[in-house]
Length: 549
Image 1 (cartoon, rainbow, N blue to C red):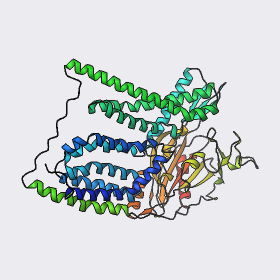
Image 2: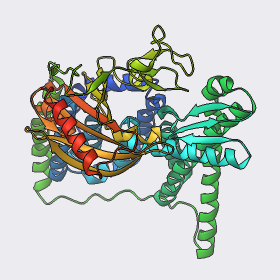
Image 3: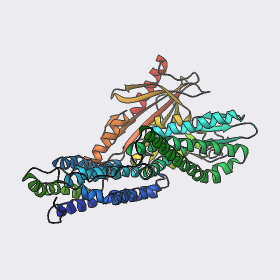
Image 4: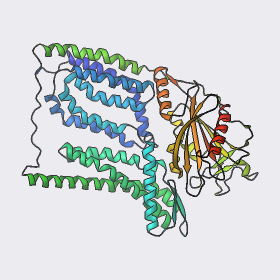
């Protein structure tokens, strides 16, 4: 086998790696911001690439033995990874960039040195997936984890005799020990789940000799993290009930996560020891040795006579010629142009409706909603229930959504007795300005039923509607639609995402999307199953959308 010299493959490989690092330089800068962002809580991400490099360093002898001839299949596998990364860069989809980078960490060694060497890069490359910020992407998982934690805590608290009730993800205690605790999104346990999975993956690589046993130990990280977070939420409720609610939601809330994480690590080590003992007993029962056999040097298939030399000369430079322009074009991606937002105004006069403003309590424990007309004059800025400050938007909207997000709200009451709470959210530069309402409604205690799509008005504006049910309240209905400054109208969140990514990637333009939601209710319960309610809803939506661009 020829030595890997800089005269041929080495020069081409260095050129590709240099261009790749240039192309992904913006990604590395953005990742640094993600790891330092307290909202993402991914400070462990700094250690992930360090561990991947350490794994390669420990396997350096095997890497030398597995050096083979360049591969055309590896070159072809590089192209979709590079194009995916380019699409992510131009479309401001960082996760696409990271997936493309992870794929290139395997396919580039495959293209230059053959599949035997590429196999050694699979685990270190896949481990880099723990640098992908998924907490804001897996909102559907987050809400279920929040409901699981709050529901389990509720069952235990009731079992020990406390008077508690659950509303969505919030727990309210009555009687002698009153308190209110909401399992917010950062307390869902998803972030600690990723951290424990990354730690368990590294520990399994050191602790277990086979991939089967490593996979078993890695799978244990999921229930351990969920159990740890449920225990933490329960302990916060107990401190609030038997001690001080302010201490529970303050000092204890901030530091209890460390204690639970230490316990989860101890359980992880115990699971590793249990897997080792079971495996040793099975090996002993089969009469085999539990020791890992000495690894033989990887055999490299000999290339056909004459083909190896020609392939070694041509393929590396073909790889460089195809990939380097993609990486350099990726590095020169210009700053996207932010489109002008559609001119959206919620009308003060609409058909025969009575129009009202809406105010939201800014205290997390209260979060009450009031029509402005029903607040006493002179006290419009103070919550009549808890005395907290009132604002024009909800506390969650103010703290979670980007600062350049515009939010308009109005209440419309019809002579028929229906009330429509209309909200128009105008997105800014960040994609996180707008999300599906289905992701936050369960946290407010609503059960969603009977989804339906329909169109209203002469322009046939699309809407997606769901029935809402919450204990103690009459049924209600919520409908929403999306449109942007280019005139695209849809009620599909998936279509909106793809259209936004396409415009960012191809036209280098950040669209300004508007999400209009309408929450309908009345004294008897508003349901689209009743013809009168549906007709009134469609009439209102038609009149409302005539005022929209």
